[in-house]
Amino acid sequence: MRIVLASGNAHKRRELGEIFAGHALFVPADLGLDFHHEETGATFLSNAVGKALTLFRLLGEGKGFGVISDDSGISLPALDGAPGVYSARYGELDGAFTGAGPFTDEMRNALLVRRMRGARDRRAFFVCAMVFLVSEFRFFTAQETWEGVLAQGPSGAGGFGYDPLLFLPEWGCTVAELPSHEKNRVSHRAKAARALRVFMENSGEGGE
Image (cartoon, rainbow, N blue to C red):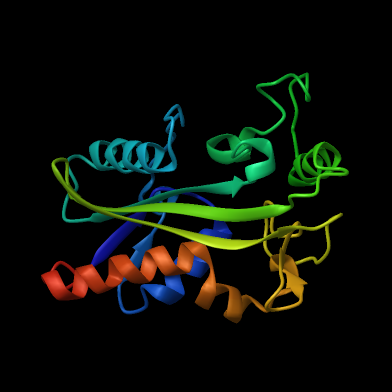
């Protein structure tokens, strides 16, 4: 099946390319498309659905492509679920960062560490809502989490986003220190993607 990923993120493409091996995986730029979707939803799922629909319409009602989109982020109970759906814009909307940017992952990580300084409840988890869209009124969703605790500071050079901050007690390291093949096996995004792949195979939508 030909699948277009509603993202230009190279990390996501590589991760999902392994899970959907055997299918032709594209990003919008491969097809000459200038794709952008404003993430204004109140939930990860609404953002993921919105992105999938925007790309589907940009493709001209699909043109034989399936669309996969996701929205993900980190949530902390001690911060009432923040950053949550604002993970990619954390610090911009509340005035912590001002000016034109660019605002980097390192800046967001430092802000989160600062705001959690002294907190006893350090539970943290990644969330991924993923959508496989066949047509405008037919799509399938999966949402998964990856639990850990917030580290006192960033550690590790792998991954992206908040990976250096989510410490995994069962592994004894942060996500950014985890080998990429292990991350691609157990992450929130990997679990959601595998659930959708099972659906594709069982429904016949994943045929070559």
